[in-house]
Amino acid sequence: MISFLALRNGERLGAGGVQEGVLTAILTRVTAKDGRRSEELSFSLSGLETSEPQEEHVDWVDVGDLKPGDEITIRVQEEPGDLPTRRKRGREHQRDPDGSEKMLCSFCGRFRSQKGCVGGATVIICLHCRVLAAEMLERNAPAVFHLELRPGAACSFCSRPNRAVTIVAGDVGMCSECAVAVPFAS
Image (cartoon, rainbow, N blue to C red):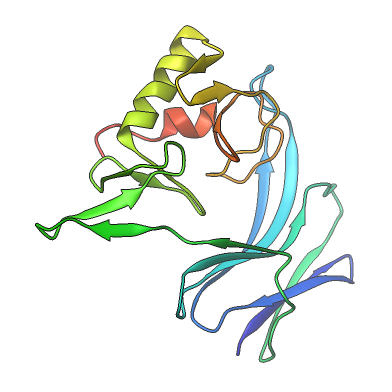
């Protein structure tokens, strides 16, 4: 198995690998913007394990306190990775009798037509919930049905923590930046 070994300034952060699927090492920089978002410099090592029986999103490293001068090194190695620090079941699908695919919305919990659904790394949001979220942002409403505004919550789409404005439902969220970035014509 191929895995990625992540080091910060020469110190081991962790190693991740998947039998089958996707393995990612992501270094992120976000610039601050007048109360809408805070400065961020972070690194994550995660993946999607697609081998049977169920798709799983897996995480090994999540570092949010990087500073200029830090050195992140990724070594590609032919060894198994560490056990993931977090696992989450992948997207759920179901088929209608007519053969069309439906997806389970992470925000309302309903199976919806695949058309209009948008998937993030670990979540899916349906068109209905996206329209409600856009209305909440436009009206600055604290809550609409099952959705609420929660400043400081993490975004399940871009995985950035401590967002200025996040629309949440249960344990999933979509920051205002991701909400406006996703076109309604999908």
